[in-house]
Each structure stands twice: as structure tokens, then as C-alpha cells.
Image 1 (tube, helix red, strand yellow):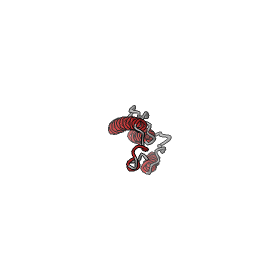
Image 2: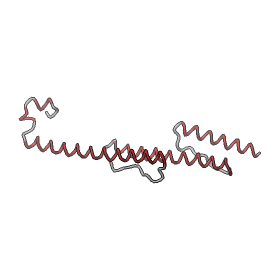
Image 3: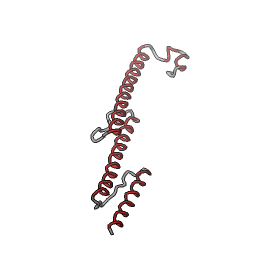
Image 4: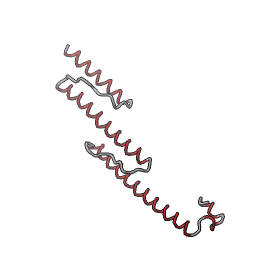
Length: 135
């Protein structure tokens, strides 16, 4: 009976690991009754899934906003340890740089629009305006 229970537990663990390897980060090992090394292994597998899932969700949320030129949503660094933390800091720093560049570009475009309005715009440029995309 003892070995059968361990075999069932290992089978459950392998099934969940395969599901996660195939992209199902909702999968977890449930109803954990095991103690000792096997119990520790099963809880460690769930912790690994939890941390990876959190990193993926946070990264996706951040980058979804960046793709919409919205830069307020950084990845939460809480609980991001080791390589997860390093990647989080890297993506957050890149998001900040993208925001800064986007703001600089927006400011330049605003100044260009003002200059065009002040200088008469494409009507005074003749055919040259269409060549550069302003006509």
C-alpha cells in the first residue's frame, strides 16, 4: 500500500509537469497528503509552477500595455527571485526607456505640427511636401 501511494503521487506529479511543459500553467498537484521527501518534492513542483505562472502573467500584462503605447503597467517585483527578478528588472527598465522615447517622439511631432502650421504647411512646400509624407 505504501509503495502504491508513492507511485500514484509520482504519476500525478509527472502528469502535472507534462501539462505545464505544454503551456497549462493552471495545472497543480492537488490533495497532497505525502510527507517527507516526496511531499517536499510535490510542494516544490507547485511552487515552481506558481512562480513561473506569476512571471508569465505579469510579463504579458506589462507588454500588452506597452503594445498599446501605455507604459504605466510594470511587472511587480514582489516575489520575483533569482532569474525571475533579473528578467523583471530588465523588462521594467526597457518599458521605462520605451516610455521616454515615446514621449520624446510625441513632443517632436507636436513641435513639427506647430512649425507646419506656423510656416504655412504643405501648401507652401509645393511637391516637396508629398515626398516626405506631409501632403
